[in-house]
Image 1 (spheres, rainbow, N blue to C red):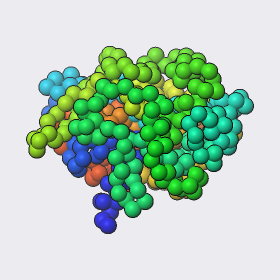
Image 2 (cartoon, rainbow, N blue to C red):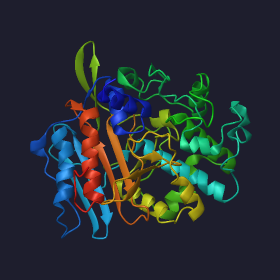
Image 3 (cartoon, one colour):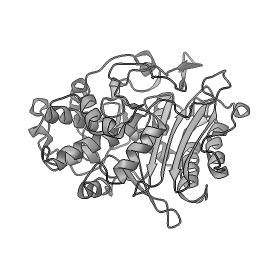
Image 4 (cartoon, one colour):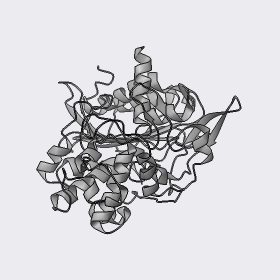
Length: 414
C-alpha cells in the first residue's frame, strides 16, 4: 500500500473530525471545493503595529492552494494578530470577516470533554465508571467507561461511517457526498444517532484499541444531560459560555443558519457525471450532536482554549488526565488525550495542544494552544469552487501555519 493511500485512509477514519477528512469524505475523490481567486486575496490584519509577515504568508498559502477564505487569530507575548485572506463569498471581493461565525465541527468535542471532567471534579461522574450505569436505557456494554468515551477507546461504531479492520469503508448515516447534501436539513435526535451506532458491530473490545468515533461524544452529551438534569446547551452556558463571556458561541440544535457576520462555505460534488457547487452555509448539525454541532468565532475559541489550558476550567489533576495521550491514537494531529490532541513540534517549538474540526462540508476550524494557554492559534477555513488535493496539500499548509504561530516564525520547518 502506498503512503498516499495510507494517508487517505487516515483521513477517512477521522470522518468528520477535521477539515481534511470531511472534505475527502464529502467529495468522494481527491479533489475538493474552493476558489483559487488568489488575485482577490491579500491578507488583512488587525492589531496595529504588528507586522507578522510569517503569519501573513502562511495564511495566504491556503488561498493560493485553492481555499476560498481564511480567518486567523494568534495570541502570544506580542499581543494579538488577526488576519484574513481570500473571499467572503464566491463572486465577491470582500474578505472573510475577522469576527465571523462558523461551524466548528469536532472542536465541539473539547467543550464536551471539559464539561464532563468538571462533573468528574464535582464527584457527579466517575471517570472510570461504566457509562451504562448512568444511561441504562441504551443497553451499552458495561465495560465501556466514561474515560473510553472521551479517549475514543470504546470500540463503538462511528455513526457517520467507519473502517473495518481490513480497511473496508462501512457507510453510516448520510454524512458524505450528494446523499448528505440532499439530506443536510434533516433533524436527528442524539438517541437516534447512538441507537444507529449500536445496531452495528463494535470495532473492537472496549479498551483494547483506539478508533475515532463521533458516537462517543454524542453519548458524552447524553451523559451530561442525564447527570446535570438539563440540556447540554444550558449546562454549557452555565459552566463555560456565561463565565467566559463567549458572545459568539452557540449550540444551535436544529437551527440551520449561522448568525451574522459569516463567510460562506461551499461543497463541490458530482451529479450525473457533472461537477456542481452548492452553498452549504446553512446545514443542520444535529447530525453531530455533541460531536461537532457548535458555532463559534476565532476570538471565543481563543478565550476558551486559553482558559482551559491556563487552569481556569479544571483542577490540575484532571487537566493532566486530559493531556495524557493514548499511544495507539492516530498521530496525524498528535496523540489523543481526553477531548484534545497532544502534538510535539520538536525542540525548537515545543508541545501544542489542539483539536481541529469541520461539519461534513464547507467549513474547517483550527484550535491550538501552548500548555500554559499563553499562546494560541484559532482559525476558520472555507471551501469554494476549485479542486484541491486535500491529502497532499492540507497537512503541509496546516504545518506551515502552526509553525508560523508557535515556532517564532520558522514556518515550514520540519
